[in-house]
Image (cartoon, rainbow, N blue to C red; front, side, top):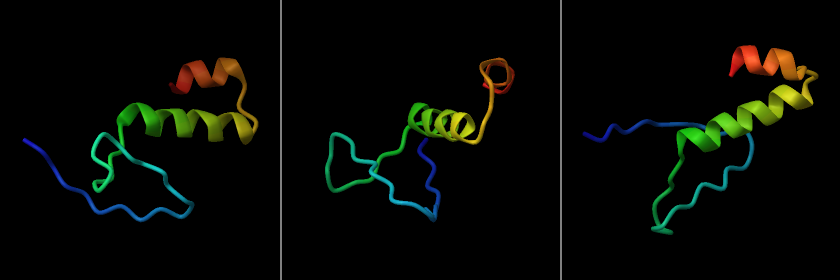
Length: 52
């Protein structure tokens, strides 16, 4: 069963998949973005391990 969500991005989102006409966002990509922001905002590796 596939669920649909309405999401508003505050920054550009490049979320293409195999089918170029349909936006595709994967959980692993979202997690990677969150980890990147965590590091940029000053989180340490130990803190990152606890959160993720």
